[in-house]
Image (cartoon, rainbow, N blue to C red; front, side, top):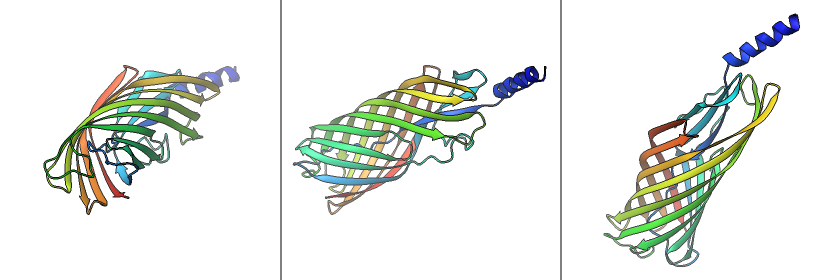
Length: 259
């Protein structure tokens, strides 16, 4: 009888308390509509802070439910994860006159991306003067990975998220001066993830997929063709498992150096 009572109370506790798993999506890629120009020109950009999209799944006594997925741009509940770092490093290299490749390395639990950009219209960065109008397209592949062992939650002992993202985008820009580039960046991403978890005495897995659309206005100022600073601000739309969606604003800033 005592054992039965204990099982019933445990079930009520599990149903009444929620734990969490999560992964993040990048809101900012700092894609410039101008290619670097020439061959093997290299730049490094550091993004010390950026807003991100958080996809968080809550667990109750029945396990993960689509109706418990939340999509937002806020930090996670500290009971679910200790820290979330929003920094990243962007490495860019010109392959030919109008084609660049970039590697976007996340510091923390954001996805890592490989991007290809081709400039269709306008002069490249190396030749651009005031009044230069540029148009480019970008294709990116992202790798999503989050692993938490014994996070600070009551019943979710650990979870591992693996997945990928595919993004396509278009960019238009105008140089108001030789140093200042203004641009508008729009992109669409599809993401697909699988989460393995331990919830009480149960091991299981589930998938979360969805879409993310970004529309960002950006400005980049370059001093002496070497040191640059940039900002982006715009709107993000994201949905998960066709169950939850959200639209919100997002901001990021970066500093860079051209070699």
